[in-house]
Image (cartoon, rainbow, N blue to C red; front, top):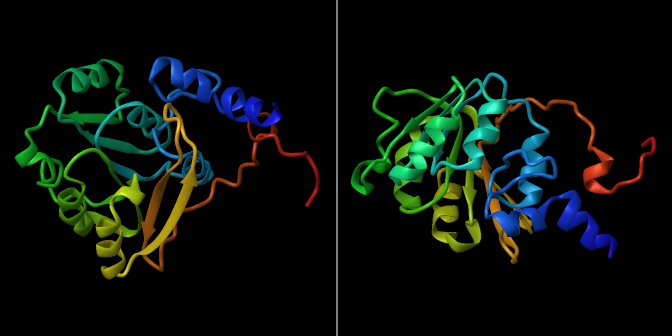
Length: 207
């Protein structure tokens, strides 16, 4: 029962089951990635980061709260319009974009990005097209990495370090893997925040 309380209510997984939208217990948007990956990313300071996201949604709003700027590429017209209605000033939505143009749509101006998020369809094409635009010390996020071992192998062959985060996440009733890829000299700053005990169920104690 305590496990159910932590996962279903403190992590708000039950709420996301009901709505189909990834949110936390305060109904704030969160990315549709595994909770362990979300926990790790939540501890980093992205206030000076430029973020590129393939596939928009709740994650676009979550990143926009934390990053200097977010560029989201979206293929579905109704979803792109929904995001535009909700978007703060630092969130740019490109779309709807045809599949043939999807991978290169945000790359024409040569902008380097500190975070690149790969989700949705054509993930290998998007990964290969966008990797040259990953800033020095940046981070690439590949969701459902367990479904795409060939992409993971390609990224490792480019010299990136793979860190896998398996577990439950919002909306889904199964576990999966969100993987982060970074170069050995990656230097994303830590926010220095503490883990909130109300969410994670840990004991408050001095370490």
